Image 1 (cartoon, rainbow, N blue to C red):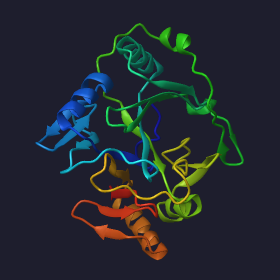
Image 2: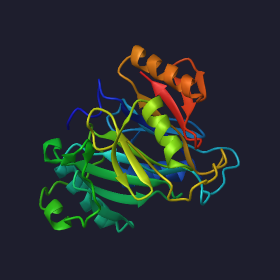
Image 3: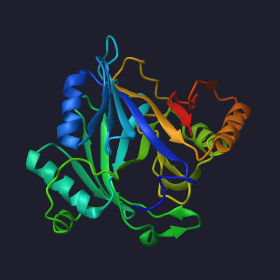
Image 4: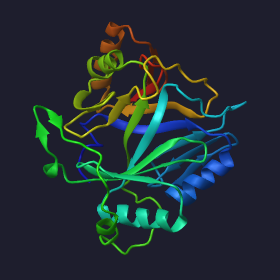
Length: 281
């Protein structure tokens, strides 16, 4: 795996989502996706791939309500596997279970798409080597083509035994209410670069990656924010290489008039569509 999810690159670290029933959600993410449980309480479970690093936290809020339609928030979070052989093993595992899924070749990556039982979107993917990506005028070429399932399965006969230790949170894709204002927040505020466009969507990254964050208005321009107790996104974290880099971002956010709150171990902000973000080092 390449160095797009480690210092000095700025990248997504952890995603925190609401679920309807914690026990059933933990079972799904262990058995179907392959996470390990790092911590667990009555209403919260922290999941990991390597036994140390939190990647996904599940929360069962009081009086939880079903995922709301036509709102901002999570489109999907994306789990990046270390190799195509790992991807082949995961694909074979999903096919054996018969769980509903979608698939696509994006030129830069090969991806599988599914929803958890509550409707939270999940992507599991593997990257093609970055030297195979095509860039033109600062933008990376991506598309949605048919996945070559037979070629992937031929890559490895390995059986699925859970997420490999090298698995990371590859990116997050968000529904937003307005592209220009949210794009300004992520570029002029958080320091990401626009690297691709798609109908009603913008892709952003740090360090020459194909994307760490994507935003879209597929739920409609002006989409409302979901209730705090709704199934969906609570927050996600962005990891900066050091305190100086994060402090510079906090200053830019304040200049933009974005909300910024200092907590003990992170700064909390939210984009103009209400998607909450923890800025960590």
